[in-house]
Every structure is written in structure tokens, then in C-alpha cells.
Length: 196
Image 1 (cartoon, rainbow, N blue to C red):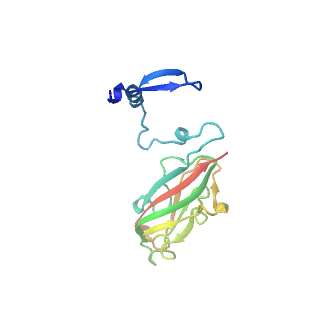
Image 2 (cartoon, rainbow, N blue to C red; image 1 turned 135 degrees about the horizontal axis):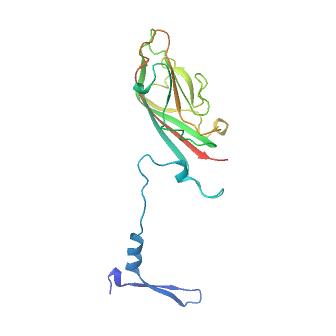
Image 3 (tube, rainbow, N blue to C red; image 1 turned 135 degrees about the vertical axis):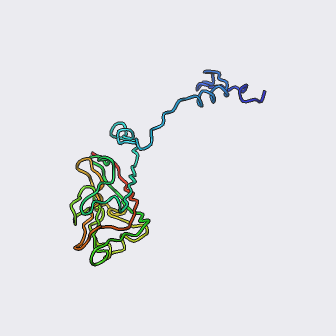
């Protein structure tokens, strides 16, 4: 009688009396038969991961958003998410970019187009994740991993949303630009928790 399905397990109360008798194989079979539900691709929403009540464990959130130079308006703002996915009262604690293709632009003076990224503050030249800076003036738009604002270690940089927000990329072309960005691609990662 060594087969799993024929073994038995006794559940005892504190006094040592038998509470119930189960076949271990049946317990495993019942556990494996429990139905689960998959969340459809790209269907994870704040409502589906929101914590019950005000205390207890919370799920940290990470947003992934991509930007390709072909996604830009010639001169203006582009939003990266399909909706205002970052909720009201989100506290953004970290943000970084993986620039997989260096950005370039076709200005009269090459690479003077500026790029900035914001969530709560999205006005061109005042963005909160990375303030608008020209491609030529910094290495932020060269290939590689780039830390943005905020960083986990600096609480004073944390950003709290005052309404549901999107991620906005501002592209401002310099004089003489006819096409704006001509190359470039990044993936942005943004970490946050939800407060009140």
C-alpha cells in the first residue's frame, strides 16, 4: 500500500482525537482540479490588483511603455499608454529608460530637437521624469540604460499623481527641422504604489 492514492492522512484535534480521514491522493486531486482564471493580455487594470481594505500587503506596480521615433508627432506631445493607466494618488518611486536605439534628428544643426517625459507635470521644458533636453546636449538619448527622476533612494523626488495620468513624451523640434526625429527607440519602466 505505497501508492499515493491509497495512503491516508489523519487530522487530529488538540486532544489527539481523529477529526477526519482523507485519502492523500484525493486531496491532491481536488487541489489540482481547482479552477483558475487567466487575465487577458493587456487587461491588467488597477481595479484587478487593488488591495482589499486599507491595511495589509500591497502589490507594487511597474508600468512598461515603449516609444519609437515614428510614434512622434512632427512637433508636439505623444502619450505612451492606451489610457490614463497610472491612477490618482499613485506615488511614483522610480523610473528608468532602456534606450535601445540612439535618437537623432534632422535639424539645421543636427540633433538639437529636445525630448522630455512627464507624468504629473507634462508641460514642455518642465517634465517631471526627465526635463526636455536636446539630443546633442546630453547622453540621455544615446543607447543604454538611463536613470530618470525619481530614484528609489531619494524620497524627496517621489511624484504623487493628483488624477489618473498617462505618460507624455514631448518632442520639440529646433529651427530647420522638417522631419523631427529620424531614429531612436526606448522602453520606459516606471514603479509606483497607490496611496490616498
